[in-house]
Image (cartoon, rainbow over all chains, first blue to last red):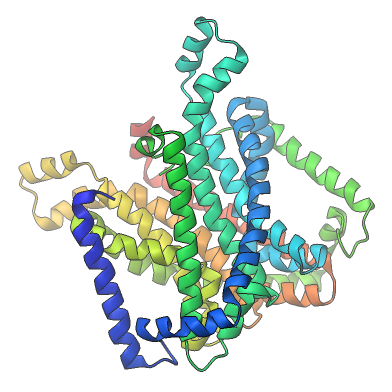
Length: 251
Length: 254
């Protein structure tokens, strides 16, 4: 987002909120609660333990997401740097990328039950392959000439990895982590909604309320959490490697 | 997203074969309830009555998916094109789009139920909600990146607005329209199976639920594999169409 466009960004947000408020008042709380009613719904939700449910859900999500990073990044880099690994792993990557997480839900319930393992496994399957794909694209795109230069200056394999490959790869890893996070949060909510527990359970149950204010408050909450986590990853990436944002890997 | 590249040789096929063999071996250690071997999954497909049921469910699923995708595509492409040509409009819509994108789509299910009900209208609505933002994002980025050179050439040769659209803007936007189609169809397939599982059980999702309730894991596997193959087939189909229609673009990018 460019800075000189900031007034237009704000205008868009104000118009959207205004339209929601007016539309909500016309349609009523049963169909679309306006932002004012949604704000008023927060105290009751917090009293019902929304914050605790959200905390537990995020923790479960993070376990699956961390596993996805630990598996996805090395495999993606390996695929990008070794032609043989690419040939062997590519068909699996393509297949698992198009596999809908939703389709895995009934299968995983039979395999893992409905507890934490189920949620973690679903999050893993939803995010690992996007992370792997981005790492693969990054590792493949590293300029051969750069590696050759490093070698001709007498860099060891380890040095070439640390000084050429890693800095070039880093922007892709951050992008992969951000894309993976979006999918991880989606999968977490999906898992919990299906078995009606935790934060996702709250969303599923609020569908039976007479007013949509509670439901919308939950949606706004998860939206804000997702935006905040994404922004945090972006900021961390920028801080660790200032060249990351300039390269806009994978965008 | 590019998934081609290393498809050369027999290695990919060999890798899939090795995976299936490994699955077969591992499944020996588990009961068929938990992890059925691939042979048990294949055996299912030998039953003609089951195949007929599967075919009917697949047709029903595909129908809803295409209806939802068509609506999303028809709305998102013009919208994205207009937004992409106006930086101010894009700046106004982008934060709202980002915010909407951050909501897990499945969390919209209760809303869809309130507005459109549990059945086919609800399923189509969820598919539209899930594929529209992705199509919009791709179209917007594409429309923004039409080389100004092309437009300038059209102008200086005195093209009328209609000629401009047909001879310059449309051909220049075809590549990203195909990208939007690929992304949108992938999302629509996910939306389809999500809707069939999270709204009233129907078609392929319904078959999955019935099998799961009977602890028939092989039956569940069949649908998972089928949905996965459907995704791959649709992707390669669009890509083939793209290659046929856009040979000039492919050449240029080589």
